[in-house]
Every structure is written in C-alpha cells, then in structure tokens.
Amino acid sequence: MAMAMMDAMRRDSCCAHSQHRLEMRLFCPPGHSPVAKPGRYKALWHGTAKLATGAHPAIYLVIVVEGPVLLPPGRLGNTSEVVRRKPGNLDYQKKKEMRLFCPLGHSPVAKHGCYKALRHGIRPVYTPPDVERLTDRFSRLPVNEGYNAFFGGANVRFTNNGSSADLILDKSSGAGLVSRDKYYYGFFNAALKLPANFTSGVVVAFYLSNQNIFPKKHDELDFELLGYEKRRRSWVLQTNVYGNGSVSTGREEKFYLWFDPTQDFHDYTILWNNHHIVFLVDNVPIREVVHNTAISSVYPSKPMSIFATIWDGSEWATHGGKYAVNYTYAPFVTSLRGVELEGCVSQKNDTSCANKRSTSSLDPVDGEEFVKLSQQQMTGLEWARRKHMFYSYCQDTMRYKVLPPECTAN
Image (cartoon, rainbow, N blue to C red; front, side, top):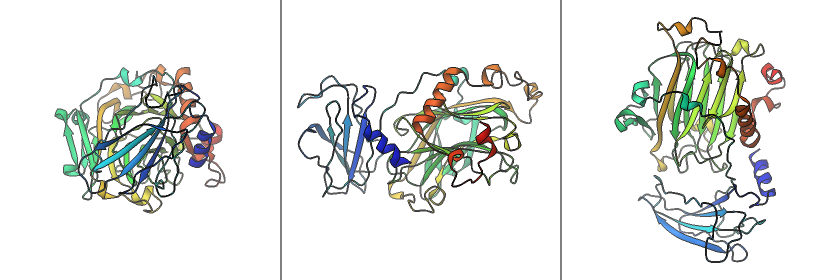
C-alpha cells in the first residue's frame, strides 16, 4: 500500500499546486556525501549543520520542491516558505544538507551509485480542511493535576511546574501516565511531540482502557504511534477499538500524518459517548465508530482510565523484532501537554451519569452537538481517510473472510 501511494505521488507533477511541497531525504553512510548529478536540477543552496556530539555522524540530502515558481540560478526567489529541518536532539555530530529546487512540471532526481540512498520518500505537504476546534471548548489542565505516574520511575518527568511532562524510553525502561479518575464517556485530549531520529520499534500511545479491572471483558480505545522504520517514510498512526473483551477481532486503521509529529505539539483527541466514538488529530476527525446494532455487543461501555505511554514495541510493532529499537539513539523523549479530561467521572456523585442514554446526560460532551459529526467535520473525516488512511480492517478480506458486521452496516 505504501508503494502504491508513492507511485501515485510521482504521477502528480511536482509543482502542480502551490500549497504542496514535495520532499525527498537521502541518508548516506558515515564518511560519504550525498550527490545530485549536475543538470536541470542544479543545487541552489547547500550547507553544513553542526549538531550535538554523538557516536554516529550522518549525512543527508534534502530535496525540496517549491511551486509554481521557476527559480533563477543561484537564488531562492520568491518561493513559499522553505522549512529548514532543525537538529532537535539528534545524536549525529554533523549533517550536510543540500536543497535542490525544480521548475514547474518537473520532479527532483538524485542519482544513486556510490551514494546509494538508505532511506527515501516523497512527501506532499497537505493543508487540512477547516474544522471547529473542539479542543477550545474545554479547559486544559496541568498534566500533574490530571495524571499520576503509571510506570517508569525516573523516566516520567513533570516539567514547567507540572503543566507538561516528558516520557522517556531508554534501555532501563519506558514510561507512562494514568489518569487520576476513571470515566464513563467523555472528551479526552493530549498534545504530544514525538521523538525524532530513527525510532523503529518505539511506540507512543494515548489510550483508554479498563483491562486492569476487567481482564477478560475489557474495553479499549487506542491511539498508537509507531516509530520510523527503514522501510517507512514517517511515523504511522494506528487506531484501534476493543469492547467487552473482543480482542480476537482487531479493528485497526492506519494513517500517515500530514505533518511531522517530531517538530511541534499536535492534539490527539478521543470523543466517546453512547452515540459514537470519534478519533481526532488536530481537531480533524480521522475515524468514527457509530454505535449501532451491528457493533452494540462490543461497543465500549464500562468506565475506563486514560493512559499516555512510551515503550519498546519491537516484537509487537516490527514483525517480531525485525526492526528493533536501536538504543544508540536513546533516550527517546515524548513530551505531553494540553491535557483535557472532560466527562462523567465514575464512582463519584455525579448526577450527569444518571441517564447515560439521553442527549443531555453529559452536556456538552454527550450533548446535542456531540451526537453526530457536523457537515464540516464530515468533510474533514472524508479528507483524512481519502488522503491519509492506508489500512482499514474493513478492507482486509485476506484477514477476514467474513468482514465484521459493522463494516457492512456503516
């Protein structure tokens, strides 16, 4: 599926739309330099960035295509913004960077040979549709007011007086947070910034679960972010839904993000009520699970805690450890802030929990405006799924000879 997406991108003209920027990265072994053959793709800018001291110097080539302008030799011209990659927390000693710009209707080409690319990809920059910022409806809490450390000890670090936190994965341990309360329905958000570099096998998760209370009948709603692999061009976002212990049926859907999740914080939101479950990224819906008769028996319906974790998922996430975590690049740090925990707190005297099936029982989280997606949100949902989803269990007929009933019902 990833190769099919790549081919489709190549078929598009590289500068066909001014809002798109195509980027190719070539990573070369230590001691080598990336080279693009002279010709129509003349290098207009190059430079060296010195990074923090580390054991693995690396050299890379970034080819950036800006359109629809034709750039004169030796200068950048009036292009749209060129984003220079920041070193971040990379362990490399230095990088050499060369930027190549192509004229309208052409694509960048880097010759291989001695300087064979170890990883490459062409990635358009997308602008999502305008949607309501649901996260603006609710107040944001300091992380230490909503969460306690779950595991990891010293690898959980509260920062900025507890308003944010760093979760760290190193050879000793991963790290995790768990909400202080359990919730029966609600609106839950975390703004995350993911670790950069080669992060194969690293898993960052933001999810709801009650497995510790109902080990055989547990419910779970997952955001799982799977780190870079050599065979992939970016982090992968996976969502999953379990209800009433239905773990034998995986309901995974996978997406490529339309931004670099290592450069800044982005919102990951789960809306869960009696009417539907919605997964949102930066307020754009990417998945909706409607509560209907087809899925009713496995629809999550018991109080859950909210978790944020980072852990070594090499065995689970990389085909039995084929692309295991490389701790040369450790520590892997995920930063968290922007916590929103809005809903019905379980086991507390909350009258809003009394009538869970009414449209006003958890107003506004379960109110009229949260019963179904607006037309604007439906547009965002269709955009995210059409452009960025590359796997859905409902399309996997090799895995399921008979598709789960909700696939045809929806």
